[in-house]
Image 1 (cartoon, rainbow, N blue to C red):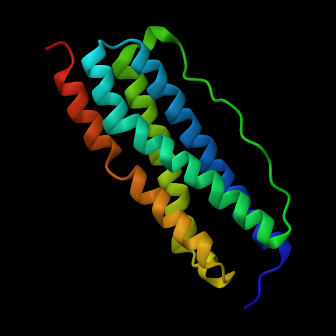
Image 2 (cartoon, one colour):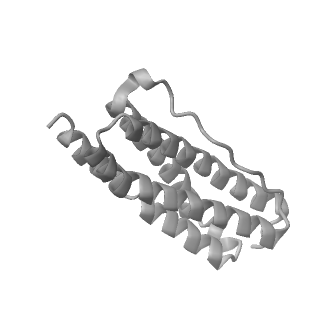
Length: 151
């Protein structure tokens, strides 16, 4: 079944919502980084921030490429708010994990719908799969970092 521009735009909007969630996670991880000692901040950057940052970039490229290939209206993405500094490192990490999980659920639902297959765009399918892989197990990695706080 061929999908029209409206269905493609809906798909693009879903991806945009997931990108917004990843931006929130990046902001929260950045805020947590600022509150940590140098060693722990380096661990956060390697284990959490960098994979989320790469996923954010890949999601944006996937979004822009799909929009361009299908003549859709794309939007730009701004900086997200991390929240109040008073929530502390643990609060920022939990906020980041929740945002990543929201993005992953949106992308998984999109993939499960088979719409990316039905629109016939292999670059889109590949990009979504890569983003989900990069975001995978963020909760476990964040939990490991939290276990070491204060040691």
